[in-house]
Image (cartoon, rainbow, N blue to C red; front, side, top):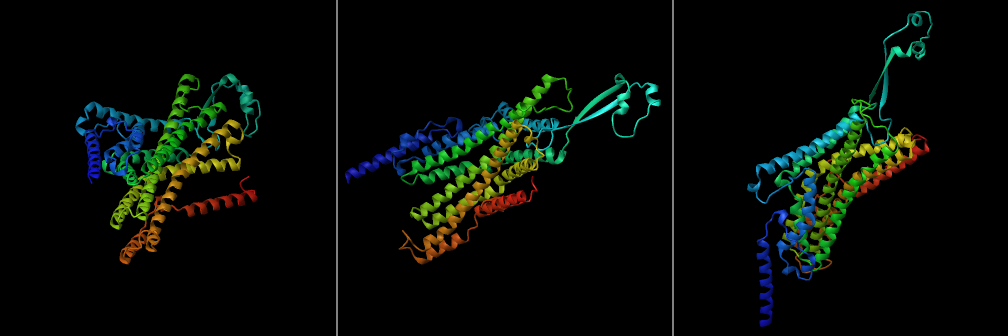
Length: 482
């Protein structure tokens, strides 16, 4: 009895000291302690400080994520612990950086139109219009020679070449609205919408969701394994986004290797230095705009993954009888709030990205199959278009797959009531009325991920891909796409 008392007091003392130490730590993200998981991996869940777990969660996931958002202008560059510490110079710095990011986005779209630059390989990049101005004509050339009315240059061939002034005008040969203005509007509006969502404090759901997912795992003996798996998965998503953004500049480099002429219609063709500077700025802004789209898709995918883990942890807790039915109801209602935020706020921005890059991908594939794409003439242009289409497909399909996985997890939670109702394990002594309540509650759930305000199901994705495949095979056999 004495020994057990000593053990309990020692555990209580260590836990209280850990809490006291963590209470002295500032919540500011710049002052997070450097916690090491190896120091607390051998402790039991009851001995682990909640503050230590939350600090570990923030250091591993939230701080790198917030730095990425600050780089893209969605969060302030400097965010003090208290609003009173925000000086006027810091406000000017944060506002100025956000304005700079918005200006880079607009400059990129303007330069892309000014250069008539397209990355889908469909059609030529610009048309040339030659205009002749007659300055001096010999009378004998006009009145003593006969010319046909056919549209040829026989008239100009008889004139003195010194008396003709030639002017070359370049202009984009494609529809301005569908090729340049509409995609630019979708991209810019998606950025502004996400900026609005990120700057509203009450809409910041990722930190709250991530903390709840981490705390769910601390009640199990394998909590460090579950948290490590979650961290690796989230880091994989972020790493794929960064890799995608770095590779997105390669198509532009391949265009330059292929010798594709990029000229600006309003600039003197002899200004080579300024032209090269604008081309570098064009490529940089294009990569920057791609990074923004990748960040939007990655943020949505990370939210989906966290909710999936949250729902899976709820299911495991109920099966293992670690939480009561009342706690189960509360956790499911909390998950409903997260899914509602995902469908109503996060899904809108990523839907615009999917629409924009989905149209580009379709155009590039159609131009290649019809033989009207310039990628069929040069191996470097073909490689450029292929890399672009491959990256666009990943950007479009990855959020859709995550949404389908989330819907599948919601269906698994809905089936949980039937599994408990038949009492396979752990609930043999539970009264029937409680089991009926759980069954009624789970069967009434309507949790699912939505894109374009439409539920996303894995079966629908498979059906859609099957229709596209058989449609492509049918058109190929009928020689319609060749």
